[in-house]
Amino acid sequence: MRIRSGVDDEALVAISRIKPLQILNVPNSSFSDAALPSLKELPDLVQLRFGSSNVTDAGMRTIAELPAIKRLHLIDVPISDDGLRELGKIEQLESLYIDGGNFSDAAVDELFRARPRLHVHLNQQHHDRDPAKHEHPK
Image (cartoon, rainbow, N blue to C red; front, top):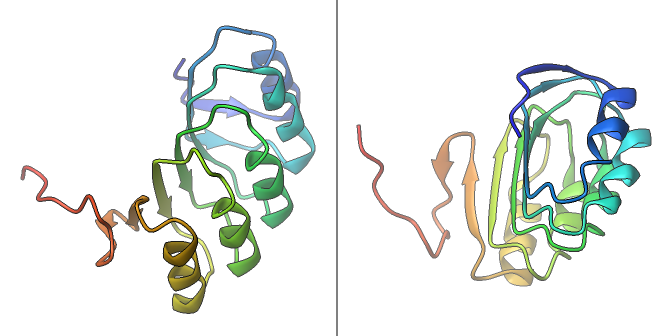
């Protein structure tokens, strides 16, 4: 499901009632950490792409509890080292894209120690340590 804008807390909770949902793409949203627990009701959600400046490191703890999440893309979500550390706990995570964020190089190093096979893009670029690094078509 792709919804381009207007997803606030109430809308995210409503979306979470679509039980078979596997992919959720809501790049221009305003929901907060308070609505994220509703996503735990989506047992098959494997891909989540969102942008919301109202989600914090606390929200990353909730995302780390999503049962099936494999691909995550954060757009201008103001996470710090603590939030990145929480994402490193997601054992099944295969791909992590982060555009924006306020974390240190040390936190990224810690992420790769925790998940050495994780495909990582930071600000539209493969990270140097990305094991799946490849050229993108121009």
